[in-house]
Image (cartoon, rainbow, N blue to C red; front, side, top):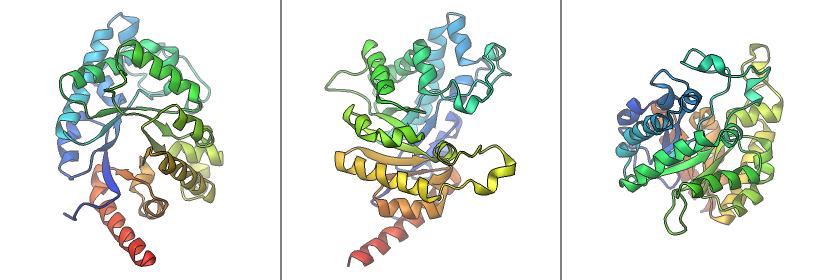
Length: 298
């Protein structure tokens, strides 16, 4: 195991049962804890809990899933991304057949925009994290997906305050995914709203910037997170956040890409979150790149 480096190397976790394996990597925290699998593990679509008046069941599902991960990473940050399933996902679950049909679900009703339309869904997730914090597991931060305006963050924070989650002196870290070009170009406003961190979601950022459907095999050869338009957006946001003291990270596919990581280290990113099987490799890349930076400055 290599020594700790200045740029933190975190790990992505999709399933609570993988928490122990993720912790065994020695990662500096969880940069992406996906909500979807822990909510749907019981075979029921999360919206169905609310349709059936079973909000407490939804709170319990989130709470127990997050608990498994947070306990393995005590003293380290765990960033929980709120529900971000598209309407075409999980149709096989109980209640999934009631999801609306959308011509383009990728650009449709998901992420923070859906949670604000169905605030009880967001309340249930925030309530679970609040209860864990009250029990001593206060290392869990809230990460809002698919943000495109500061108003969305304001509304989400208002809901958090409604359940008593955001007192001024003690609050969970509150951040956003930067995965739309809109989030890139309103980063000043997002910072001004008082976010604690951002994490890049380069799959969607690339798709939306280049106009390329990442699921379309015919055009995959043009899909690359290393396109100058993507790299420049990452650099811009990191610079703005560093100036404001907002933590920066990246999760998903690009966080496990050595070529992308090399550039991000030079841009001054604070952490990189990789898949479980890539953590050690990315740690090596970060250490090598940091040594090069020291030599360049020397």
